Length: 239
Image (cartoon, rainbow, N blue to C red; front, top):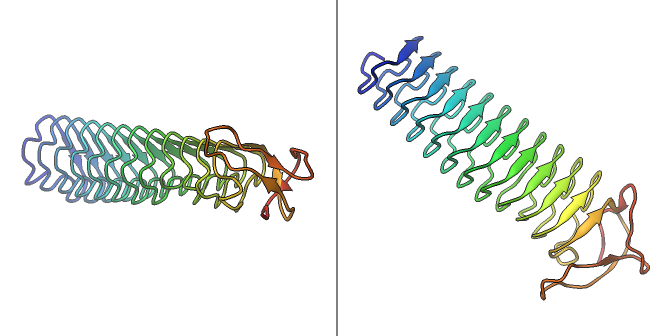
């Protein structure tokens, strides 16, 4: 806190912590360069090497971990915990990222909860989302819930719910859909699963008949005129 300004009632522990921080009153800094040049970081906690270093508008936030929240902008009232969680993220106010690299370089995803190693890694424009699991989540997944390792990774599907290991993994443009089960809808073709789907354990390598849903009615994913249920039923569908 050597050159800190407007930092009364704050605590600085460690080499170069809060060194030139500004508007950082009522805050706690601990770790090498933690909050070193933070701007508008009042009522906040920065713990770990470079935690919150160069962060801006991160007031009332908690950054814990090596480089957690480093370079983050407009991330006020948020919690980033884990190595490089929320690193260089922006526009993610009122969010919780827990796990190494969770929310790494993410943007414009306020009011979100991402838990797990790489959860929400690089995600953009996914506000009001919940990603739980290693590598869960993707961009353009606003109002979506992806639960399971790899669930929804690279899916670009808003207002959707994917539950299970790699459920909806690589799925593209399946808005308003629900996939439940191991690898459900993984890498399925977007034109077959356009939107408004409810699919349980869809499986690989089967030809399917399908109808579009431009009128807002739910799609039907049909194989031999039977909606399939079961372990990996119709995964990697063909059209």
